[in-house]
Image 1 (cartoon, rainbow over the protein chains, first blue to last red):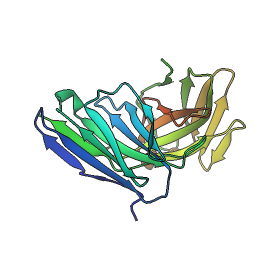
Image 2: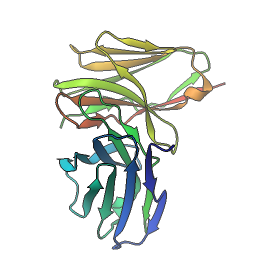
Image 3: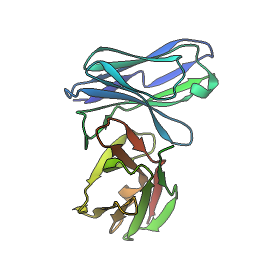
Image 4: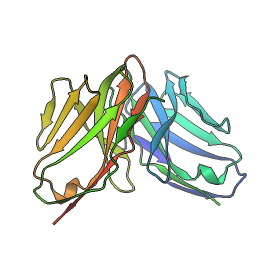
Length: 113
Length: 110
């Protein structure tokens, strides 16, 4: 019973390509997030969707675009991949509000060559 | 920039030791605080929330000091399985924006 799932688990691709990472949660949560964890292990939030509305958009290049077809899914599309995009990308969900616990997916390890 | 700061460590302790981590936050509007645990090559998982009055869960005790803007995590009787990175998280009032610290690495050795 996977609560938050991501696909693919590993992604190796060439610079300049476009790729997508999918995320699904079966917890009925109303808020989903995308995080990037770089080689220094720093976990930075990229996006958040609440009730299908983008409520956070940190200083992320516009090559990154989140897409939420419904409340249970938040996909991450990346255009024109660069070497610096190599990282682990985590999807997470929460019920929202203060004190909300975040449930993370297993992560997608992206390597751009 | 509002940040959450942690000593990255690593803290290298023997089994059975007591170890404490501190975390400072700069956003005075932060209302909720958490400790997450992240094992190597795994996702972060909630360890415990941090309440103003302090809270305990088995060998783990979390404290919040709003005046000095820091939270702490105390681990008693360390086990080998406690080896992981511990992430401090704050959440601003009325916001869905969690801020993670860089994490503190703990290594418990026999």
